[in-house]
Length: 111
Image (cartoon, rainbow, N blue to C red; front, top):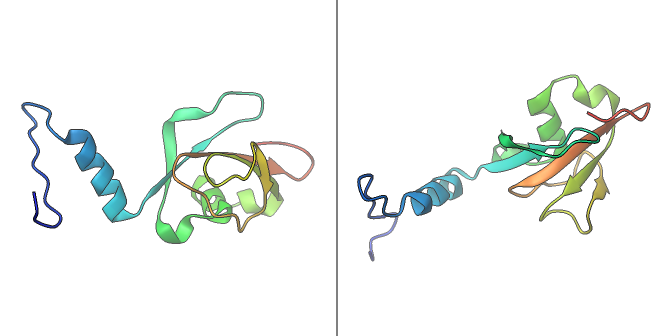
């Protein structure tokens, strides 16, 4: 259609449901970030949802637990925002949609 912000959908026939989901994510400007515990595969079942203002590693840590930043050392990032895989980043690193993050705490422990 030529109307702005218009999308023809059908729940009965399943037309454009995936496109509708993509547009909702785009309009709301949300980012999905996945966690990766040390020595395990990433958890793709439960993403951490970040708003535009929280799109940094610091915002990600605050969404997980408010005290996580107290012992923050660095984070490992896999995905579109990383220049290489994995990339070691600090608190200010801006995350992209569907990035995977592993937080490393002082003392060598990973979350």
